[in-house]
Length: 280
Picture (tube, rainbow, N blue to C red):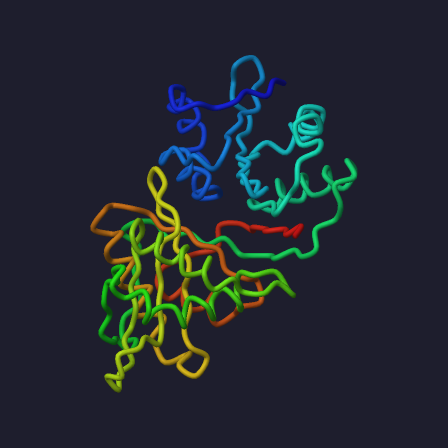
């Protein structure tokens, strides 16, 4: 087994490999397609055949696609040498690969994750049926002009769904990330029905891969949940992606039964399980 650094001039082979497993690694695919400068991408190869792919960002985030469990023992020497001395922030990906990496890092002396977030991975094939008859509210596609009105929702989303326990919200960084999303991704939001100018629910994409886009940032004010606002925002994105002939993927916390139910109503089905393990 060999560890090979990926560069844009040999992107096609990596993407051909990832295309088969894209629903489990949409963010990894997106980083390669967009040639992100803040990540390094590596392939694990046997006799020039790609058997796994992972990326490491400057802040220590590891995204991975390790579909062959039988290869894990072969990965260990290469990955141990590579990650020795690296500072880790999180491991992000399909459950078996994430557990393999966190166990390896523990045995290397890199520590135990401070927090494991367990998710259900859900997939929606383009053209799938969607339930009708739910409450439909006016939905707007957001731009950078909407950033101030979206920040209360985004801040609450980050604190409730994203940040590790005990970590404080960096408002400036949160705003910067939202601005980047508004410039480069799709965001829909539902205005307050009373016409107050603020939003009660939002949904967006956070990665665009080869054949599918990953939904993320879905959040509804607690006082407005189970009223159809979130369904309206998610539906707006799904309908736009349908026009683009894109499949959809997302991950939702295992304990979030109401959100899972919403996504099933929108045509999503469980396709696997996902872990984000935070080290800091």
